[in-house]
Length: 323
Image (cartoon, rainbow, N blue to C red; front, top):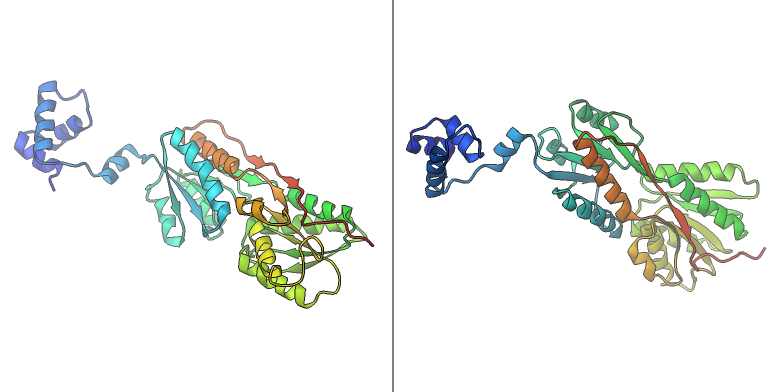
């Protein structure tokens, strides 16, 4: 493959002159530029994108980092990101795994959106200190090169507990997410704080991991111990769907024997029968807003931390308990 040295040799000019011509610089006369471009075409010269981008210090690519990206939740989030970034002239790549972290310091991307507990906050701060522009969706961290776009997890959990209270439930099982999940920890903390102010309510915490299989396992355990109507707040919809899946194989019915609230209102939950009561917010808007904030950071425009509002979407998976 021809390089600029080959072009310079054939044209009888310096390498810098070839570089100026290939980049459309006015430092080269039109005649010389035309000659160089003709030779480049003759030699089938293709510029190396990485080298060109390094010189310009931009790639027009944004990286979004997830610890994993299976399930409907991530698809909706990515849709909001893709649409917004495309309008701004940026492409998007999805990254996962510790080896992909190097894309940031190696400047293979212009900025990053992070929803990935495998990043330590210290690592993120180090990248920010080096001038990299970052948006975090999963932690509290402050730096001029970082902005936060976080869910209102506190209000979501409060709404779920208040709803169970309104339906006369005095004991509620909480199916949590992974230990390292910011959102799970925030939701669980808000549940504990809300229940402190309710003398007639207790909670029983169960370990989950945000997957359907952990919801199925929780339902299996609760069905085995069943003696009275059970209230369960699943800290995401995937686990709630897992509970539905398991209970469908038993004589227990959601809305009668098991009363379930989820969190996320992912698209697939719309097809559950009875309709799942869940905490709703716009995943597309979350992704779009994160993208807008990152573009503003890259462009050195003013940014401020944002919070995504949530609401309780009432379904038929929770019915009033008759004491």
